[in-house]
Length: 381
View 1: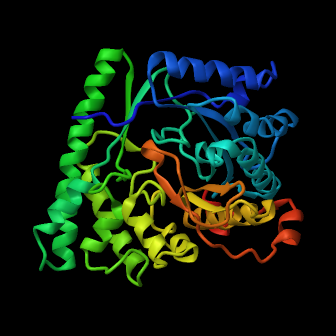
View 2: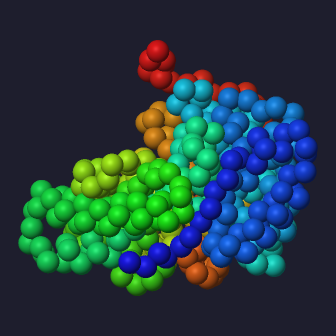
């Protein structure tokens, strides 16, 4: 079984450097360590500010653009909201500013720094996927978490039941998800044994790659859509997500992470083609994020997009996550100096078509700051 991508995550750096204040130096050391041990990415240049920020955490947030610009494999994430605490809009405002600054500092590489930065609501502590992985404070010392992929395998299985009804499709996906996850379980157990580490979880997410035949979008089209983005896309994604979870849960002793289906635009050839055809727009993508594992992921927008518009996009995704008690995230890339066309990041990050967005100003809303309260039903204790 091929291991497509290797990652390490560490305890959120904002916690580790709270007393020393040498965050940038830590970022450089982590990047060097990742290169020396041969992993693709190292995550955990992170902060958890869903309810409030200490003075140092606020300072730390503003180091993120510089850290991403001066490293190659380092990834960063910030959790700004949760169902229990609501949405920290002061942090959300800063996120838009950070994304703009990161885009500028990495402008010579088509603002690639933004592809290594994600903003969360309800971030989980055992996520094996980048750019959002960090080693949660509730975790053991060393843990092996494995993310399974396999959208191509699911599509091939569905091709064999061209005339099957939706119940048959769901059953087929469940069976394939069980097999894929069982292999992941075996890999995780063996890796844990060899590395003398704890077996953490299997993340059931179907993670696409830019390679033809490895697309979540193509799975949805195999269900009967002409193109991803057509009416019915959200319903198909709901069926897929549910079937993957039902099949995968039985195959692993510990399931966690994000667990569902990923829809990163630049990393999925089916999504890329749908955007280029004009069939998949940002508003439809946002609707799909109420179902999928994450949110607005690897979305490229015009480089002149204002910071407050980026913050408002983050606020909307946080609202979906907080109200629905699920993880949502934004990994948006305002490509400096470009407002149309596409940009290629190479490797797993793929090619991102620059999507048109609504730039009507949310400035006053974002500038108010404060905290959007948690939903009433979150008070369950």
